[in-house]
Every structure is written in C-alpha cells, then in structure tokens.
Image: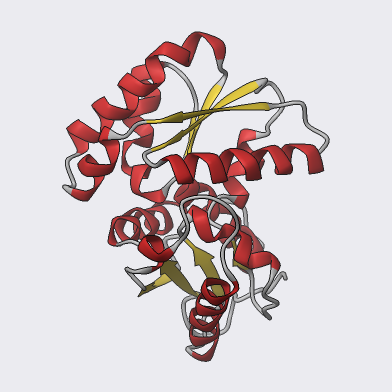
Length: 230
C-alpha cells in the first residue's frame, strides 16, 4: 500500500524483522545508503532461522510467529516493515497490513528481472536458502512474463565468514563459488542479507552486476513512502 509520510513531523520508521543477527547490519546499511531519512527499528528473533524446516513450506506455527512480530511492529507505529530472512518471504502473502510489507527480496527480484538478464546466478550460503530463493525467483519470473532463468549456487564457506564478520573471507568465498558460472550468467543475485556487505566488491571482482536485497528493498521503500525516486 502506498503511504506518503512526507510532512508527518517524524522520520519514516522502518521495522526490520530479522531471523539471524547477521542480517541486521546489512539491512540497516541498506537503509542508510538508499533511504537515509528513514529510522531503522530492529526486531530480532534469533531462533526463527534455526526453527525453520530445511525444505518445504513454513509450518503454520512459524507463519503465526512471524505474524505476531509484524503485529508488534505495527503497534509500534512502523511506517513500513521489511522481513530480512529469505526463508520467511512467503509470509507476506499471508498477512494484510496497512503499511508497506516487503519480503526480503521482492524488490531485488524486480531488479534481477531487468531486460537483458537472460540467466541470473542466485547465490546463497545455505542450501535451504538457495532452493527457496530459486523457487521464488522462478515464480516471480513467470508472473512477470520473463524468460530470465535462475541458476542456484551455494557458497558454504560464506556462512562462517558472515558470522565472523570477515569481509575478505566472505568476498573470497562468494567469488570462488561464482567463478565456474560467470561466463554463462548476466548478473548475480545475493539470496541472503548476510551476504550483502560483499555486493560491491563482488561486482568488481566478477565484472558483473550484483543485486543486493537490502539495497533494493530500501530503494523500493523510499519510493513508496516518500513518492520520491532515489
């Protein structure tokens, strides 16, 4: 839902609901870069990721749990809500809110489906995240009438690098996972917010566009809440 917050006397408050601590800093950084006038509000349930199934849809109990966090954000006067965990992106389809509610990679999918991208490398540090993101990207491509094809890749060493907040190791883990595929793809889509700090250096290292969920989401939220382009 579009909602113009200009002239309301306070900064737009964006609730960032995270399932892992490694997603918090990238989500805040994305807002700082693309929607600097926004006020980030971090809500963290650090068991959401551990409790999610390795494959298949989220059980109703977890959908309800995320729904309660969204309700909490709304009660706290959030002007927009961003879910930062890709495994919980499907929850936006089950919840109706009076403010913009974004799945973590809805805006990123739109960017990655840009004309000229025939194949997109969907890069994750967890197999479950890779499978979920590829499936939802494929569905987004079909809904948009796009022929863009996702190619899923897992960079397992990136998980520990992100948890240790080691930018050099994170970049190297992602670069190594991408190298066998770069001749066959037109862009890279980072499937998790924890990988977003490597977006710019990875693009430089590969010579390819790299789409980051936090930056794309912040751009979309600014557009809908202020009706101003970035």
